[in-house]
Image (cartoon, rainbow, N blue to C red; front, side, top):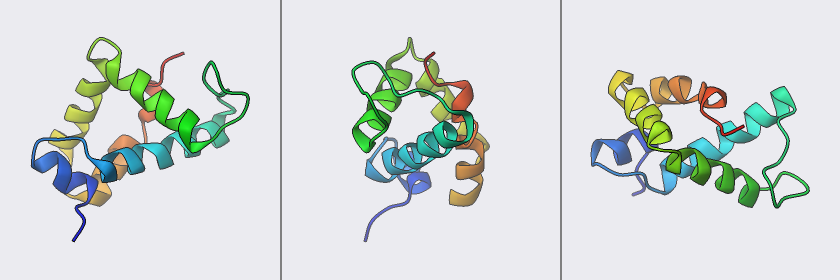
Length: 93
């Protein structure tokens, strides 16, 4: 049985479900805002989205604080997704 992003974070880690949720939200943000693909990519793809997520999470802890803050405010998977939907504020520019 696979865990949800919320369950992964409850057990102390960023796992496949968390990355999948963030990937999906990055694609939603880029479609809604016209955010350009990251350096090294000529078009958006899942690899480009994962590069953005990796950059966000490695940015002096800010991305990790964002994920942690969202998790501590969330009560379940749906509320975690709503909180994560503000990922556009954390994307590296």
